[in-house]
Image 1 (tube, one colour):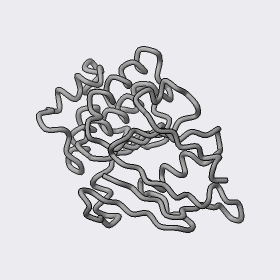
Image 2: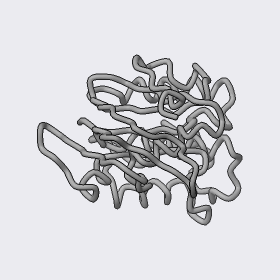
Image 3: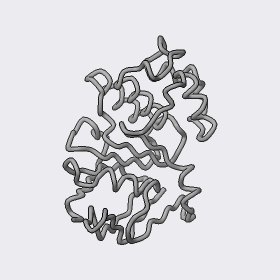
Length: 206
């Protein structure tokens, strides 16, 4: 998969967050978008994901030299961030079942196996509203990483995770990163992107 940004810019009112972004993300590499708080890295990631419309420029999506429209691309991308809302009335197992209705998990993964991967087996029938912030972040990451999509976008993925959970996250992405385009937005926190080999600096496009 390739995602091409052609002269992309985003502004709020009269302030440009970033501008003149010309870049191609390909599945041959893993990328990290770096920037300080408020620099626009999360905004850029949402633009790349197709969930936010740029103020100028165009995005194009391609799989196997075939161009896709935005609706088709939505089915090809998984997204996780600490601000992504979960259905807190759902239990963990219900959340997994609900996700599977929209995007398939990797072949061979059963719902119980996904629960086991999260490390939250003892809470599989508990409503998410009773989960800690760290447990909820584990769920967000697992639901995104374990979806069988060619693109995986992660915004500050280590938020609310302790050392043990960070190790879990790094291994999870490593195990399910083959042949995927991965883009991580990070606030200069290296343990969020040890698997990335390309850096994109938002400050270069101010």
